[in-house]
Length: 314
Image (tube, rainbow, N blue to C red; front, side):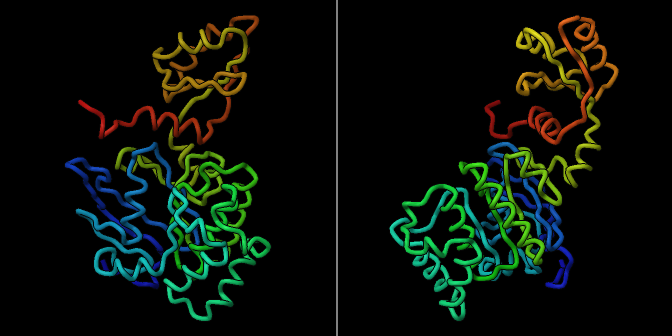
C-alpha cells in the first residue's frame, strides 16, 4: 500500500487475519476510518475486537493482510505506530501506588515528551484532574481511573486513540463526561476508534463497524445500518408477556423477541410474516400491538443471534 500521512484515512487495513492455536480470531478483516471521526467498534465478546485493536497499534503482527495506521505501514512501521497512538486497554494498567501526577510524569518520561512538567500540568487541567493530582491511583473510583487512563493516552499528543471498552463498569455520569471529552477531541481533529457494548454510546459515534467472531458483518452510520437491516419491529404491551414471548419465539418470520421494560419487542425482515404473527395478539382487547421504529439495538441483537461462534465445540 502506498498510503501516506496525508491520506484522508487514519486507519486503512485490508484482509487482516490472526489465528491462535489454529483458530481464526480475526478473519479477512478490512476497515477504513477517516481522520477526525469517532468510529465505533462493536460485536459480542470473543469476536476479535481486542485482537484487531492490538494489530492496529503494532502490538500484534497479522498473519495475513496489509494496511496503514496514521499513514504508517502496519508491518514495517509497527514501532513508530506504537509511539504515535494512544491505546487504552480494558483493564486499568497504571501504577496504583503512584499518584495521578506521578503516573503521568512516568508515562511522559517513557514517551520522551518534551517540556514534561508543562505537558503534565496541561493534561491534568484538560481532564479535570488537577485537584486530585496527589491522590494515589489505587484509591480512585472507576470513573476517575477512567479519566486518568485517558490522560495517560493523551500525554504524548497521539494522532489516534484506540479505546478498548473504556467505559465498562463506570457510572452513567462518568460515561457521559467521557464521551463529551471524546467529541471535544474529535472536533480538534483527533481520530478515535472505540469498542463498546453500550448502544447509547454506539449512537454517539460518527460511524460504526460490527464484527462477529472475526468477520466484519456490517458498517456505516447508525442510520445506514438501521435502514439496510430492513427490520419490521412491533411493540406489544399487555398481560402474560413471558408466555407471549415463549409462543412467538420460533414463529415463522419472527427473528427476535426481546423484553423491553414493560413491553415486548419482536420483529424480522419478512414484514408480512411478522404482521401475521402479531395479528392474533392485536385482536385481544387487553393487549396493545403497534409498529415502532427500528433501533440500533434491535439490529445488533439480531446480528448477534445470527452469528456463528468460531470457538464453539462442533
